Image (cartoon, rainbow, N blue to C red; front, side, top):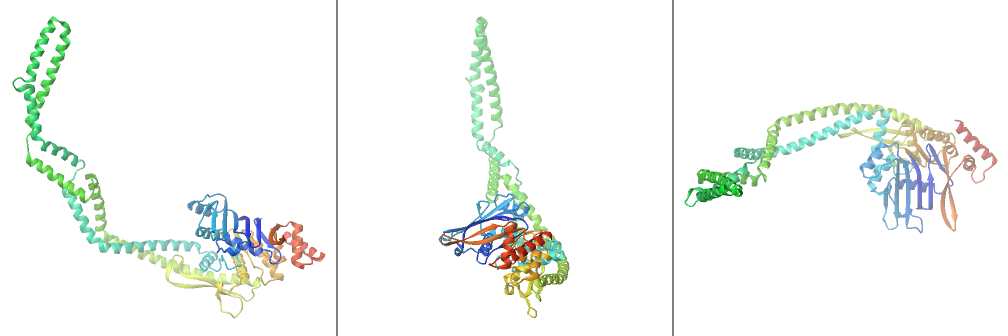
Length: 554
């Protein structure tokens, strides 16, 4: 609900703050005091078109702020969170207009777009009476109202889900048919690639092993020559190192028998001899195994060339080439199964289309029956609200193609006078008639997901017993929603839970507006003024007190 409204420099309003309560709030006051300006300010919060003409004379900027309690509106909280705004139990919307054209919108302190405001605000508050932000003027809302009345909302949701499934299937078929034209060419290409990679019989880690093998084969002559020469110098040739070391080892061993301090040196030399002897034997065996093999080297080079070619074509490594083959093999399997998939897709589409047809026919029949009942219910309410003879015709226009909501477009047609052809509401209904029509709808469909309703001009052209009836109906709506109403009728004002008087003041040659919340005594005086006009008599005060007392007793 709307808890607070702050207006600065809008038209004749300099600075104004209003705190609203739950239930029915009426705004009363003399004509021209600024009541409609307050509604215009609420319209700005709803995202209505902003004009610099609204800015107070002599000022450069106008600002409107509205604070809402959204603790019972989890959907709004979620939408705000998804849009990146702080989500709490209170929602502050601020809109500023400047003469320079820099108009800004803030939601909970963060800058927001007009599109987001236009999306969120109608879920918080709706105005009935002026031709801005009108639920009744938008035919897309009429179907929702009819479904709510007829209890077909669940059926509509099921239809919408089926329609979404059908749309997905159609998109899949369109994509499938497009792919079918490319399928054969794609199949040939992928088959060739898969066969080429399979024929290569690649193994993970193979390239590293081949590179090592190639290096050995390419250096065979050098490896054999150097290892053989090393063996000869250590062991095999004249003057070999091991022969010399054996003589030295024997001499030092003989000396160690004389001087025991040389025993450790003799042992070390003996150990060195044994190690070098082992190394020499290893080099001999290694040299005997090394043999140049140009054919083997060529085979390794050919294999590496093949791997290099595949890497250029498919992926940087053997492992990635093998992974690519797995991917294209899976796609090949899908391509081979495409005929089966196509038949499955067609069968599913036909099944969903038939289900949509059957459900759509049931939904249309239910809506037609609901439209008759809604017509009678709305006309009965409208006739009580000073629209005797008014005709309200919920029409169902068949669509050439079904949409997510069904097989028909719904629009409420209206004729205020007998004998006139009903026409769309936006073309024929006045602001007061729209307000009363919405009030009638609220009697027939009391539940609503919009927490705050604003009725302007609802009392236009009515009086007497009808005025009291309008007040009672507004009070009835206010049992479930917050209702704000501008009225000139005391019979309406006395039903308020909160009454605000809008006054125009002139200070230092400037006109401004203020709003006062009235207590019971003030309300008695204000209702008496509304009854008697400029001269309030004792009789008017007594009558006003009786009216207020009667509504409180009721």
